[in-house]
Image (tube, rainbow, N blue to C red; front, side):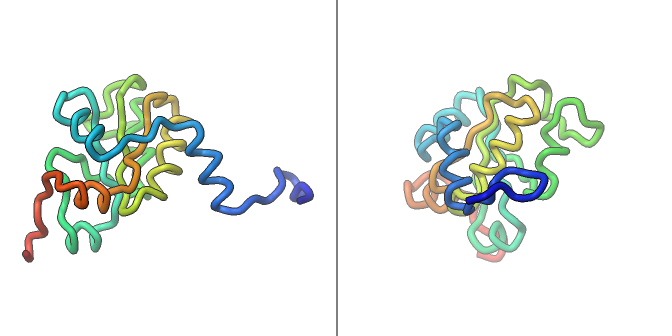
Length: 139
């Protein structure tokens, strides 16, 4: 591939995802559950409302939709959430199946949150592992 005008050579989303995941220590559902239970990690659910309403949520997870993630978790931002206390925060990002969360975790790392990672397989893997969920309100 040739370099695009004014930028790097184009790459596929699969290549970008593979490149980004190589920089992460992705967690299994069991590892994420243990990290959450220990109080050492902040589990952040970035799924959009329709998925949470359909499938439920993970107890103890902070809900921050993807389009607000960087503003809510940047400790230097005036729009941060109360949990965004430092750049040393261990953040585990959860999406539906573990794709968008990898890209989101890399974005958080670019903000200086060097311990950001994601849940391999996302919410669906968490549920398949039989870990606790809060069912949707309509269930």
